[in-house]
Every structure is written in structure tokens, then in C-alpha cells.
Length: 108
Image (cartoon, rainbow, N blue to C red; front, side, top):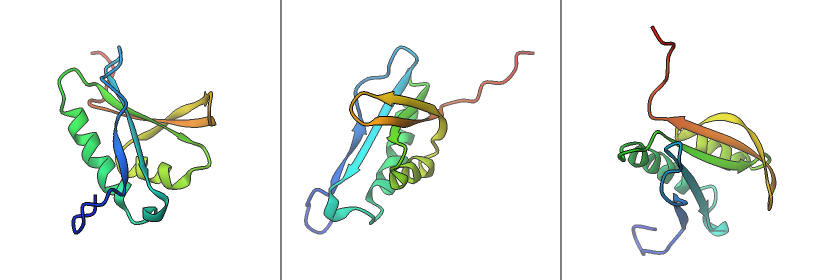
């Protein structure tokens, strides 16, 4: 929301509770007239930090259409790394990005 007017500029949040692997799915979008102003880049890292602090959450995941460079930059700025690709039934190929709450290392 714009601080000055309270006007909504888009939306950002999680699609629901963490899945069986402890992953929350992040989504964000700005309305066309507010795109490119940094609103998603401001919201996404805050949501990722909040999400990772929740009990039982092991990480954050996002899926972004491969050609949507702005959304890929937002995800990267929020600390999500490319994990792979997948096919989405509505948009085709998407990049899967994740950030885990802790890094797993080799057992000693």
C-alpha cells in the first residue's frame, strides 16, 4: 500500500500453510501501473524473513515463469536460489526457487 494514500499497489503473501516438507510457497505481484517501482522487492524479503521464523517452516519456495525476469530478480533479492524448473498447467515452464532455513551439511 502507498503510505501516503493507502492505495493498494499489488499483493504478496503465502499460498497457505507449510507443506509436508515444511515449505511455504511465496507469491507476489504488483498492479501494472505500479510495476518497476520496487514494491515487490521491498515486500518479498520481509515475507521470507517472517516465514522462515515461523515454527515448523524449513524453507520458502516460489515458482516464476521463465521469461519473467523482474520476478526472478525479486526472488533472488529475497535470497531464493534457482532449484530447478517445472511445468505449470496454466503458464508453462517455471523456474523453481527456494531458500532453506538451514544448510544441511555432510554427516560426521
